[in-house]
Length: 226
Length: 231
Image 1 (cartoon, rainbow over the protein chains, first blue to last red):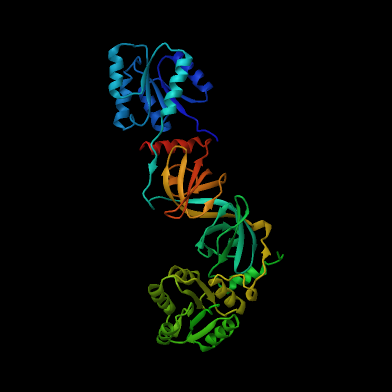
Image 2 (cartoon, each protein chain N blue to C red; image 1 turned 60 degrees about the vertical axis):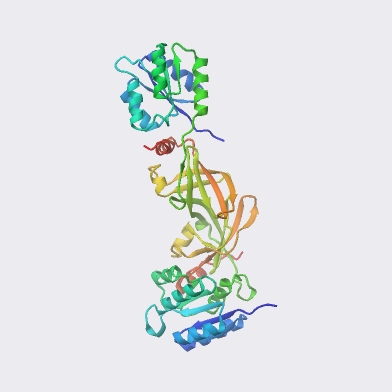
């Protein structure tokens, strides 16, 4: 099963650190985004919604905490994981970070093993909350390919990977119906589908309520009996 | 013992009634005819038919048949089969009848095979010998089709969408998703997904279908994450 590529944002104005982290994490299959300022970082967060942010709190021109403030303002800090990376190992720095509620604090310098295990562990634990919809609140159109195998004036037989369980109106897009001028709303599954092979089913679809003129058009294209 | 199905017709043209009687009696149905509203409802109460054939424009009143259709559906729900008959062939007229609950619609002039085949089909007997219509191969050029099924969305997460479906969709299938929710997730008209899990449900009766997003569709995956965090 293909896995979704995880995005990691690195906010650090030290180019060497940027290159180092980018190289290590890209090798492990992550998509690494780089930024040097909290402003740039915020727009990257809004666009990419990364799975993890590695934030240096001691940026040259500003405090990294500014980014955390902005994230709190957008109600993002409890949804997106942030890990502080800093050369400052003082208790105050660590305490302040804890107060914000970040995931952890990595003291520079760190080696690639530490970096990778920290990132892996963190991303492994992280999940975006799902959205649950109320019944009937949100509908989707699901389109599935099918083949029209045979037909007569009353019905068509289609082959597809859908096993219909009962009589129901269905919509089928096909040149076959367009050429006969059979619009939407005239096709009804006649009975439950038949298994052909596992995962492949034949369904008889009744053609409902079409004028005699259209029935004649159908008769005209009947060439090869099955 | 086989129960004979009873058919009640109403048409103000008695020739039509006689024709329907002839066609359907030969198919083994017990046919009663009527020409006015009152006669129809009197006989309806007395016979309790299984199927009614109703002329749409009785007594030259446009759409008079719709009223009988509406009334019947109110009284008996979906229990009785109702087929409308009409000289009118316009799509709006047919759609109106289907919307009001007609099971089918036959246009005049009446074709014997069409009438008997449609009545048989209404009784789930489409393949009855007497009206069996042979099948023909669909022309190769137009045999491709797309089923368009509407489904309720149960939930959305980073990996995909959970849907409720009345019908089973085989796992491993690629599907296209479209609709309002998808408009918020992509600039394209539809997005591709793969059915990765299918679970039967009893209430309501059907299936929970999980459709996974295409992991290479970075644009859509971004929009999904944005939606999940409320951006």
